[in-house]
Image (cartoon, rainbow, N blue to C red; front, top):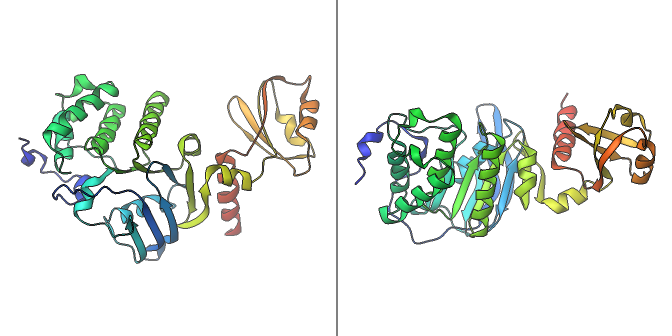
Amino acid sequence: MIDTSTFAAPLIYCAIAILSFSRRRLSTITVENVRKAYANVQAVDGLSFEAKPGEIFGLIGPNGAGKSTTIRMIMNIIAPDSGSILFDGSPLSEADKDKIGYLPEERGLYRKAKLGEVLEYLAAIKGASPADYKPSIDAWLARFGIAEWKQRKVSELSKGMAQKAQFIGAIAHNPSVVFFDEPFSGLDPLAQDELLAVMVELKQKGTTVLFSTHIMEHAEKICERILLINKGKELVYGCMAEIKSRYGKNAVQLEFDGDASFVREFDFVESVTSYPRWIEVELKDDADPNLLFQRIAGRLSVRRFETVAPSLHKIFVKLVGGEEAQHE
């Protein structure tokens, strides 16, 4: 038996009511024309979208775009000013909340308690039985390489280990819907890849996965559909492939050795986005990628030359940057 008095300190997870385990399995989330304002700030302004079972839905945008507010409204932590939020066509009931897993942007585990006790407590308040959550917790701890820390205090964990522990706390009760709010913050690249792999596994099990991020590379790797927002408003919504097609295919990713700064000077080049070891070149609509290849031949040692749809990062910069310019 877990002594819940050990966790008298407030946890953000406790914003979700502690109620009996429900038999209904949640799946499709429908958000319709939802709005939320704080004082004179319109945090969410008429958003509508749908997240389906067995898919990873990305709620993306810059910091302060309204992503966390949207997730908290879906979970009924805060109420929208107007609009509706439905799970399989019905409002979220108190009992339904036990079927939700939530990793909040603001991290917070009870630091004086042992890691295993904290994780068992988080699963227990979701209505899961010890027979279910104990083996689940042990399996996830082993999966993330922190099993030997189970009997150690949370305060002894590194930042990365604590982040993994929070992730386990969100999924140990086997939820049918999970919300990950900026889940990769504070993690090294290996740990980020671990979490991405787990999110794909949850999708394959039929879980509805919704996560928010301002890091476009993560969303591009695993999302089937996305909603890009800025200042609480929709900028683009739909399937990743369709969005990329909509914003053109006349782009080239170029990996090379040498100095490629001269590429920007070509009159058939619309823009160049530089990364540490490669660049993405957006060509003008009528430009032939072969012309670019001819112009760089002999001037760069090319390792990869690939015609691609524009990256999500590129689309993000174009849409968000363009919107910011309109308000200047």
